[in-house]
Length: 148
Image 1 (spheres, rainbow, N blue to C red):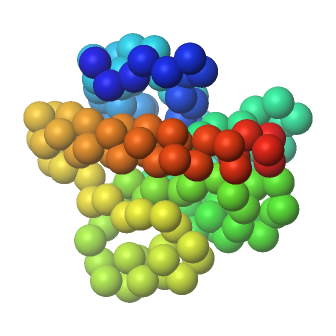
Image 2 (image 1 turned 45 degrees about the horizontal axis):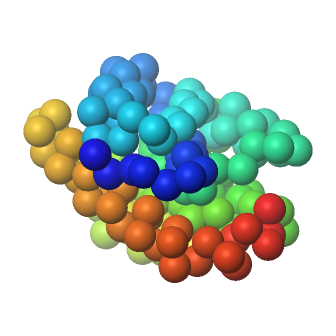
């Protein structure tokens, strides 16, 4: 079990694939049942959630290729909004194109992960991801807590 902190860690997954959302829910339930995972099926839906006064995820997992508002567009919106700029955004995409990786980092993504094609690989990716961000939270908790 990865979690165990007083406040549950809150993640927002933005992905238009219902299958990927279900896989993520299953992986989170297995790896970190105390964590909160909210799923949004589009960039526009995620932006609406992020505009809500008391909705403040610790980390956003963002797919790039979505109809309507793309992941790049959502990332651009988040990094230009004062109340959202501090939220880490991790790209979780099937694209390994160097242009996509470069653009994501240019737009200030915190990290870029290419989705594993197997569930076992995806679990391993998520486990490393959860360890990293939860360790980061303990280091930065005081600073982020002041911004909320």
